[in-house]
Length: 405
Image (cartoon, rainbow, N blue to C red; front, side):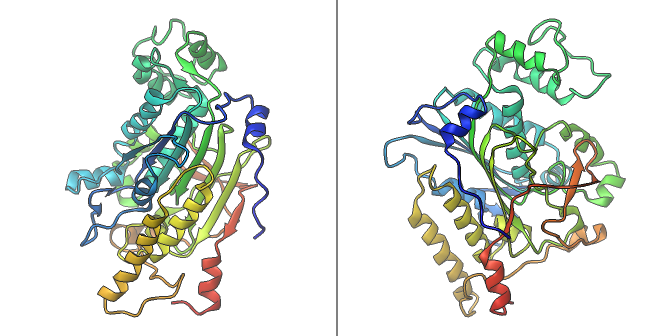
């Protein structure tokens, strides 16, 4: 596929979109990191015998607390749904329960801490990737609530959640203001702005995600759906806007080329006419957690992590020694297994098509050939995605040309 286009000036891009422009030197950087299902930074993957952090965990740890020119870089990490490890927590992870709460918490972190001149960064993996995109969509839709607006956060979220529900009756009809229209109406957010409950046109510097799956962020598992354990949660999540908001300046997604589970269909971004976001979606070898991290052989995950850090290094200050340590850890894994260290891009490809996912069937991923998904029901349409800016990472070619395993 073709080389990514030249990157436009951020200042000129923001002006052309009517955004709230940041100061030439940001007062601070807010970095929100949303981890995947069943993953947390303390114990890594709960399916592993040892602590194996995801790429979101490792990214959050690689960000310096202060840039070289003294700008604070404030990281907020949120572990994934179901990361507690118990049966109830695992079921929450499978059904999508709790995703709305996590989305509100992430949004509240930004709204509580953001002031004009700050820069916003949002990262996520798997379910956390969906959450990251949903939070970005909310910022594009209703802005960033002020300290006066935050007390109404719950009611505003309910209004947004039911903005397309004709039978919706607000729990508090006069909150956040009387005679309110549907949240889908431009008058709703304009009234929020007029009452100084929100700040509109707030730019997001970067949204970076690892393998967003499922139209609503939750892989649909057949037997759970038939038992009615996913349908209610799916409806709860359907209001989130995960499209490519024009408030996002840069959007990066690492995608897993070899994921075969039917339930794990990728959710790609698509640029619509007039959108000026710099978009790069790059395919890497491996399955879902090969690219997002969490398997014992972390070589492929470290390659995708390095790619994401490279995309963001012009905006964030990273501890490069930390990344080098991650590569050494990946090589140490082979030594502990009494195995020869594998060449670059030759890391083990894991197959997640087992357990509860076998009954769901298999579907090979097809870069450049995806169609749009109806966000209200998660079903594919016949409309092909256009302007997705997909690329194949060199590690794929190296693996093929050099006869990788």
